[in-house]
Image (cartoon, rainbow, N blue to C red; front, side, top):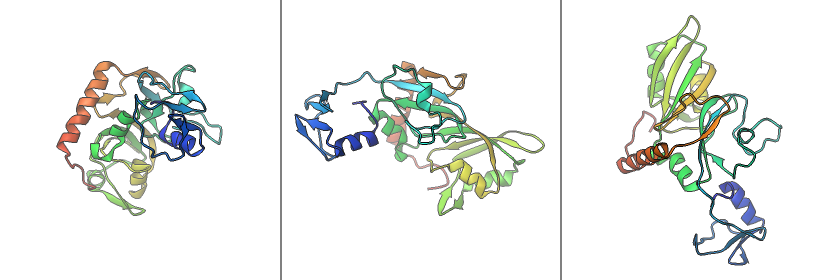
Length: 240
């Protein structure tokens, strides 16, 4: 219902702070009938929220979490103070930047993060090496790092200098620190990593630290794209 994240909701239920039909429940898997069952948190009845869909240009140095025990700036510091609760869809680590989607629609978020959706995410990555076609091909084929097979669905050279290269890397699935670990497995270091697209949605000219709502057309386009991918159930990439 857009009140909080799934993990926060589970904690509230287990703490006995949630009632369904005036009965306290402690099992987060308890089924409810949305629109029929009365749900209360700390005695206050929940009502459906207007659905919010946001695009953020996350800067480097900002963490993708609601709170941080080290006191670091989080993506929530970039939101308006009167913004209803929204949660990030996936993550970008502290050193990474670029397009981050946020919403209070958990079902929509789950469709995007579902591995079966194979949502393409496109990154522009600077590495401390002049890349060769052999290295690019190894990224396409995949390498084993700490027991995980890591690869890129697609990779191409954007430009290169005397000591570094900029690459465009597309993933349609992702593991923790996927690109950074893949580069480390090749003996390379990532200098800069920016996500520039999620499915058909582009970062475009959104300024660092800025947030904007998705347009109706953008939302519809991504929904259409997700439905098309789900119907095709197409397995792509080299790391299956």
